[in-house]
Length: 384
Image (cartoon, rainbow, N blue to C red; front, side, top):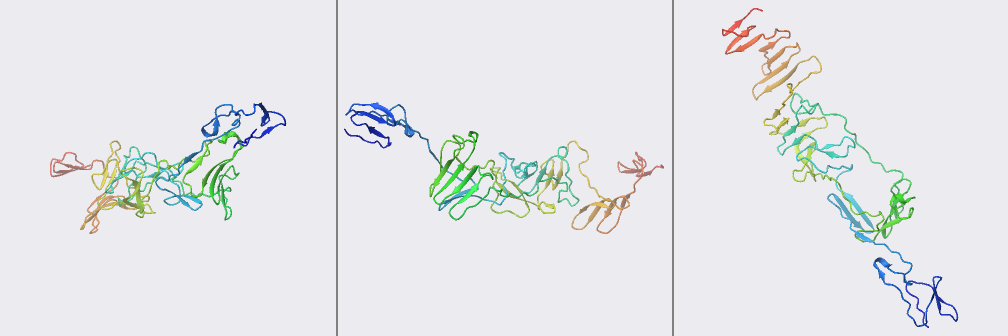
């Protein structure tokens, strides 16, 4: 009688003078010469019946995953190490899922690291368009017409990312990186593989069986992740609403969205210094409430006061109008007179003192009336 031990290494014993074969302490009586029936494996080494050969069997599906770097993310295999790097400078920045073409990018007020649309746009020629005064407060254009004084305060200050207590490094053989300080999970780089483990004390953390460690292993030189179905896998590295900056940029230039994708940042020809001096180049225009049809264009449908110049003390304040040969100052002098002054020669040909009577001067049909609303002569003066 021949006895064969199967590759599954089941224990087979025959008692002296008996035809009873005991398999794993479960007695079965067979006739000598009879072929012992088994069962055919189904997928993943799991049988479908109750045969004797594969009675105790388990299995799991292993799926290969490929780690792919999206735009701005590079993945490099260097010897036994997998390196993941991103382009750009330090400080994470996430753009919106959708954006308005040509809109100036601004930070989100909550985190200071999320990019969002603003209501201000810059076109290809450098024209800046602001919304109407009726909906946006605090925009004062300075006397020289080149800067915006009323920039709203409250931006989030620069932030520093600091590694916590769980960020550790090993010796030359491997490097251990604890995900959190209490070591609930870790990443281990060994000589020939990379292991990503998840530890938990209960089943609510996606670990099968509760407290069991499951690892994702990348062998040396292998491409992709091999993972099980117990929530321990990394499927891809994806940036949501990714924003990519230009390879080179102009110092102090405003950034704006690319006209094609709305997610690429590009230079504009408008610049702003650290002191807040904003410069629009020659040929550019500033429009408030509408696309500008002139170098400075204000459109306002509801509010009567569309501009204001304020001096914070009692000194003179003027707006200058000039060309290459002559300059005129129009404004308020230190004596509180309204004045039109020849800034080129220093003459003051026109002044109105404060406290003058209402409706003092009239210009009607080529006639001038002083204290007379309906002058009948070229110059008519009426007593007060």
